[in-house]
Image 1 (cartoon, rainbow, N blue to C red):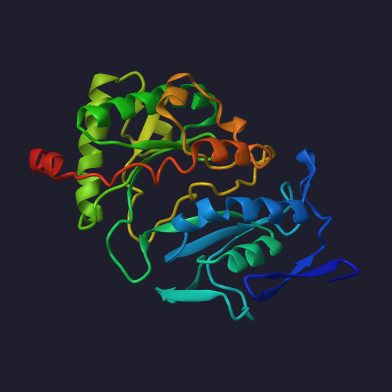
Image 2 (image 1 turned 135 degrees about the vertical axis):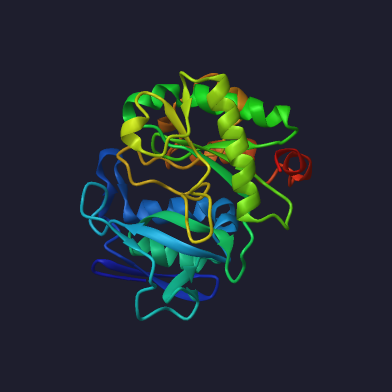
Length: 294
């Protein structure tokens, strides 16, 4: 049912509103709000598992990419009955655990979804993440850097999955068995980062001050912590290319694939071909590494 600039549709037994369906969210690519919600329906089986039962931060662009944006942590009021929330440190976060909630957020022009590293009510990390986020001028070297990190992890008998951030960076995702602490993962991350910095001093740095990094790529193992968040696998990103944060094959990384190649217009074909590369990776034990680095 539609009326003027509003359409009402039903999802999983709930009525949702689509306001201003023709509003352009990515004008350069001709992606309007109605098309965006269609893409979210396609992404939902892959995106929701990395957002459900976590504290969600979204980035909203009421007038589309290129317009003003804002981060939203506190859930807006009033809330539909199907939207679940969880309070942490006085903030009432949305729990993105259903397709109706995802589409409701999409109608609010939430273009990016950033879940917490820990589950709601817990203190354990849901996975281990290493973030490589270079400056624009270093972006061409990021795949080389990611490949070397992957090789180092493999030498430690740790399977991992690289994913594009959707911007210039790459994140390395390591599914881990339950029971590890953020402190333990940070200890392994520091060991790995120091090893790579010593082996490839012209490429890597663990210097946290940006002005001191010069032309080197920073391996961020520190930001993986409780209370922090990161762009979810399969989240859209609000750049002009409508990029999607996409898990990659290691051979794609070694070939120097361009992160901008993965976007809302072509992600469906890739998902049909490969499925979820992260979900296919077994949870890793870090016991042997932790025993060595202690």
